[in-house]
Length: 188
Figure 1: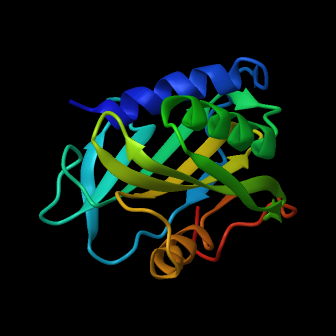
Figure 2: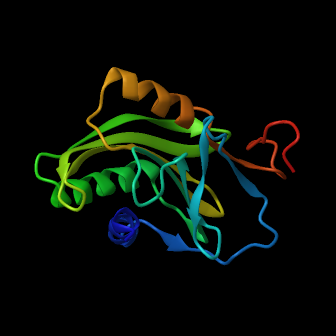
Figure 3: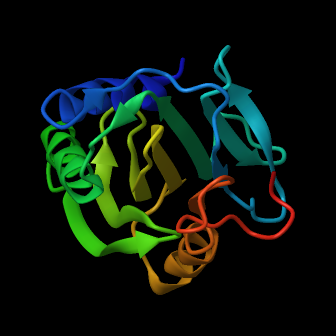
């Protein structure tokens, strides 16, 4: 049973209801999400449209994991303030977990796109009976909202912060046709 995906879908719908404006789909998409995966992670599940993907470390599964990376691309959503979005997710996180905490780690612009990063900690998630910590980076693109997560089934620590930060730091959105939103060399 994919409890985590269900919870995030409900939280995402609630968070987006007041912040997003649907835009006509542009074709072909010129925005790209650059997401270098840490060593040892492999695709564990993806949605039929490929816009949601979950990655785990072998031999873990998306049902039984200690670390989980989730990448979601919401095509057609624009005008989403990434910090407001991440803050609303924190509110939903607190509703679902007594004693939960959410902290803003940063916001700004990378490759011309606004982003926000937060960490959420739950001492005991009712659905799994385990603690859970999630780092979330939201990037507001012109063609999509990009939501990237690094989750662990333990409470936050300095040792846990390092791999989460190392994963999220190089994650960017870029546009292959706009010099003010540059992609790394070789990205087409």
